[in-house]
Length: 241
Image (cartoon, rainbow, N blue to C red; front, side):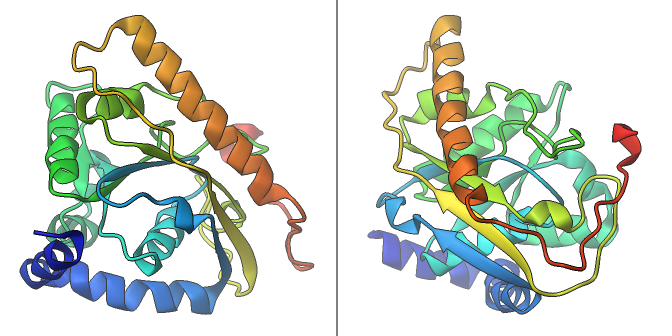
């Protein structure tokens, strides 16, 4: 079954996902000036997309770019989001992957992501594991989950740097509910990965660093020429005071 047919079949079986990918991108583009750069780097077949994480809003921006590039997307999302009755129902219905951090169920996310890649999906991973807590929105130290997933499957990793979404729904802040913010998603060339299920610790560490260096490069690209709107005034972040 080729990728096009598999996407059609998946859409027939996942009505909530189909509804989300129909409704969300137009809403995102109405709200922000979304720039999707480098999406031509997405390889045919399964891929891991690894990005920095700025706010609660950036997943819908990245998801919109990936959908417009013709990809079926599954995010690894922290399990706490599933506790909200409405959001949890949406995430489960759209077959997103819960991540049970620092628990006995932590391996379930990795297994689910492997199965998704085996089906040809594009799996989105935020190596930081959460939105950045740094007052200047610089990224946190990455965790090794993206390297582990890549080494288990041999799927290429597409690094994405993003900027602009930190003005909306950053950690500890709601809003502002203003239109016109420029949000840039910059994807770089895929990083090939040799499958190595034995995953020696040194190899995991090296591949994590390689992926993170590529993401950092794309963050710099996304920030080039970016300016906040004239009305924006940075708010004090509770954890950054």
